[in-house]
Amino acid sequence: MNGAQRLPLDESVRQALGAATEFLRSARDENGWWNDYEVRGPGQFWATAFVGACLAELPDGPGRAAAAGSWQLLRRSRGPSDGWGYCPRVPGDADITSWVLRLAEALGEDTGPRADEGYRFVAAHLQPDDGISSYLPQIAQPFLERVAPRWDAWYASHPCVTAAAAGLRRLPIRERLLDRLRRIQRPDGAWPAYWWPDREYPTALAVEALTADRADPPGPSARHGARWAAARIGPDGAVRTAQEPAGSAFATAFALRAAVAAAAEPTADAARRAVAYLTDSQRADGSWRPTAWCRVPGPLERDPDARQHWERGRRGKAALGSLVLDGNALYTTASVVAALARAAAVLAPSATARADHAPHA
Image 1 (spheres, rainbow, N blue to C red):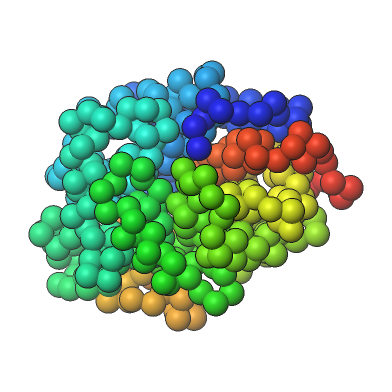
Image 2: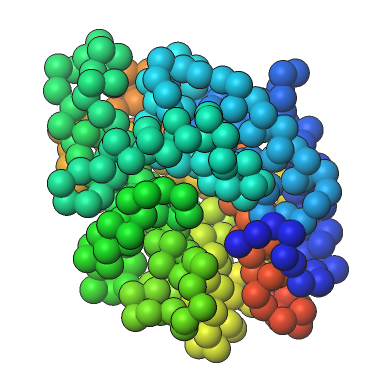
């Protein structure tokens, strides 16, 4: 969705986006980078790519200008490989590289040599099952083997990474990824994830990829995913998760994205409730409370959903088997910004009116 193609915003959404944009702009370090999560130091490339891609959803203005600045930083940066990784010292992976390219595409900056390197890098991660792996052994092995001798699970295809890459319009293997997404959709309509405990994230990215740039109505997979996401949105507009039983702004944002990507009347009411919940739960500084829990499965752990217990907040080598949170609230806040921007472009202006429910702290 082109950030310049926007319908008029309801005032509550406009104010929320303005405050969130200022929060994110002010959260950059002295060199212009966003830094969030703490696994092996802050995720500089990761956070900058994701926050930039989310701000690029906005129309022309300060947020989109900040997104353009983040692309210029990333375009000139290189780690140990052609792709981008967690931070400059970590080998590139297909997931973070996909988010860098999503940023470039949103800005119309996806045709230069550095972007071309990125597309080739992501395409090289295609696995025999037509999914995309996070890492390639020939690139990541020297780094990862400092911790453990084998990383089979990290070299396998991952649904959430496949969904992120499938949203890239210029990726030559995109149709193969879309076919893969159709095959691995769960019977309930959601998609599984490897790095994320919240299935709203991969489901939104899959539904968006399946509906992007298509004139025909959404297909059955996209509609099924949108209905699952809409059903996750509670009467007060919040999505509740195992990690955030009181309500997760992160999961709600991606449920909203899925619901509006395959826009249909059965999902519109849920989308309106989610918009109201998100605007009500914004904090005074423009951010949302951090709720973007990311998980770090073990190197041989192919099915992280089967794990019964996850530690929280470990760092470095001890992060394996742990859930980590965006402690600076950047990932959560950027997720909400993108979701509200997309919702405003799809729902009628009245859709952003507040539902009759009590405000959330």
